Length: 317
Image (cartoon, rainbow, N blue to C red; front, top):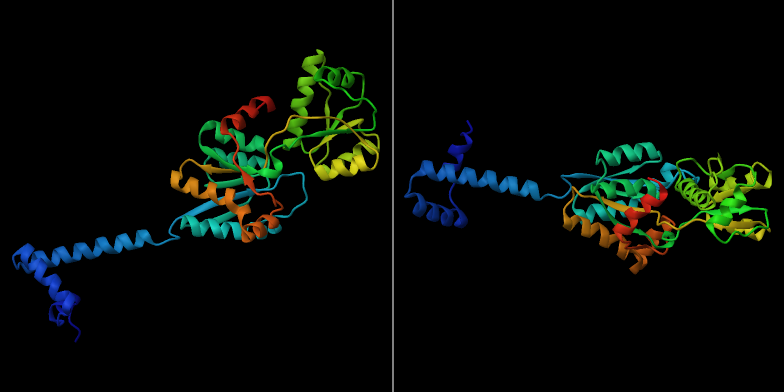
């Protein structure tokens, strides 16, 4: 018949380590076996708890990724493109990380308000400015290639307004509504802010907007007479438009998009790990390959957080 565990412990022959431990505990507790047993059991429980705590992966963090609403990229493609980056962050932070691809802006805003994401890479700056302004998230990095993201106003007209006032007067001359991508896209926010400033300078009323979903639909609106002017922030669309003989009436102020933000519930050490990881990605061949997967070959840079938040006022947030 098997002996109870504590009796088996008492009948096991001691090895060298046990002899040393017994000698030390005898000196401390004066040979009182009851006190020695209590001490050893307490030490074992404490050690087990410490080891369990130290195991990586016991905490699950959420890494949210959004690639905008006006480009045609599927969720599964995005998930695959960001897998290597997610794995790197998991290793560096010693935690499990769940990658959430979030396409809906309303969901992003709700979840950011609820502090549901630990790390987020978000295309539109008007979504990331709000939580940074509230002090619940910190701006860690922005895409180097998109610091100067701006809306270009495509047209067939020959006019070239040089000031917001001239633009406002031109747009007040009975032309059609101005075309824009999705109503809550960052491009739409840039268009509205630009038209608002122009109307204020000219003391006129800003024209209404006519919306289409995607950036690549903007030239079609102008070509087919639905609008006389339409805004897009896609460099590829603008380049093709100009190459085909089209004109750019004016451009908006630039804003940085494709921003990495980190929840302020994370430690400063974790924030620095995330920040440095993105900033240093472009410095190695392996990192360059990961940047290629997400179409950001130039990598990431630091952007002044106060200036970032100030852009929210101009956008009308």
